[in-house]
Length: 111
Image 1: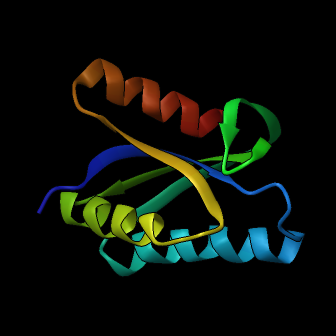
Image 2: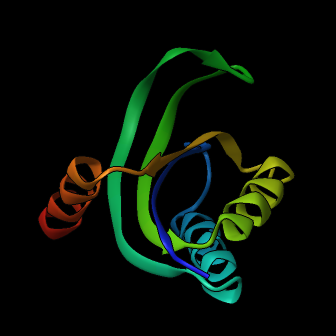
């Protein structure tokens, strides 16, 4: 089973405590690891203005996690994220060709 390169961006509610945010990030990393993936890097971007209000929130706490995993891991990760009420939005991008994978590796190095 080959590991593919992924990046998942997610936005947490800005009203969470630091402990709650850390717990959410840890849970997401554990889902990846428990399902055969490897976390390469975590980029905490911070609180930013949202393009439009989501659940009455004007701002969100942005994170990007870079990881390698089989496709089944992404399905489980997104399934669990869908039920997480602390998350406002999430999006996963798969890096496929050599140029994209090279870019993924550069981004991981720069985090």
